Amino acid sequence: MRLCVIGDPVGHSLSPRIHRRFMERCGTAGSYEAVTVTAETLEDFVVQGCRGAWDGCNVTMPLKERILPLLDAVEPWTASCGAVNTVCFRNGRAVGYNTDGPGVVESLRLRGFAPAGQAALVMGAGGAAKAAALALAQAGCRVTVCARTPEKAAALAARCGGVTVSWEDLPRAAAEHGLLLNATPLGMEGSPEFESLDFVQALPAKAVVYDLVYHPTDTALMRAAEHRGLTAVGGLALLVQQAALSFAHFTGIVPDAALCRDILQELEAAQ
Ligand code: NAP
Image (cartoon, rainbow, N blue to C red; front, top):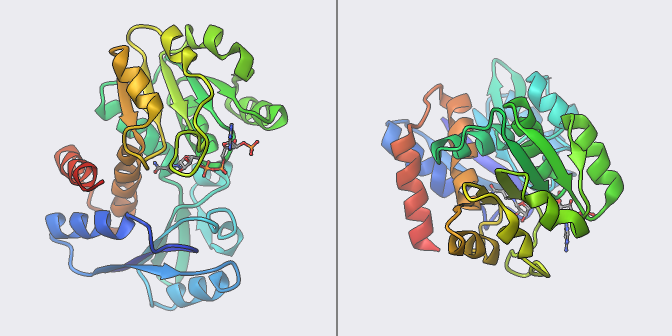
């Protein structure tokens, strides 16, 4: 198998490390590289892939949406999500998938959170929020979107059959949600912090807080959740789970929960 992750910049990506471990532990021969591909060189990359240069690739910033029209097919869920993070090159065709949304749902299930019938409060309305909110809605969650740009929040909520809440109303709304998912850069290294984390105090006693930020691995939001005794899940969990689902598309082999847990622990220890 000849696999890679494409993007610009791509040198910081943890995907090579994760996929090489999957290959090693699943006995899959081949390579996984990080390849710089820009918006300008993307079409050529897809042509080369279809000609047999690659068996598959992961797609990161800024190409997740741009690659869509260059593909021969995308699975229906991926088309509705509007972003691709996995491409398989087979029989001269490029087929796109999005494993970010399913990765959110699967990583929550592995932490004991069953989404059906739950209320999920999604913070943000960008690419990650969209994938997470649509997948959570599909898995049976009632979705509330909280984002700083009201039009974007309303558009995403409408697509999920959900509702919106303003930042000011967050503490009141939090009390009604069993899952709070941060899909903004707030708390990420180099980005601003949340001005207030008071809303964490309002969450129900069994709530799960999922922070998609993974640098740092223990964000202020996660620490506040843990301080209250809530379950806190960090962004590395999604990074590993979306990779596992990609690997299954590439190879037909589904990395099991124990392998994903091992890799997650290795990544956490290395941070
Ligand atoms: P994006 O498409 O740029 O969306 C960012 C969202 O956050 C937008 O709704 C944006 O609002 C909002 N936002 C930005 N700065 C904000 C601020 N200071 N206050 C309030 N809202 C703010 O980015 P993305 O790709 O969705 O990524 C979002 C976060 O998820 C990042 O931290 C990223 O690292 C993380 N992520 C993690 C994984 C993983 O595998 N763990 C995968 C993907 C993303 P506007 O639209 O109004 O600008």
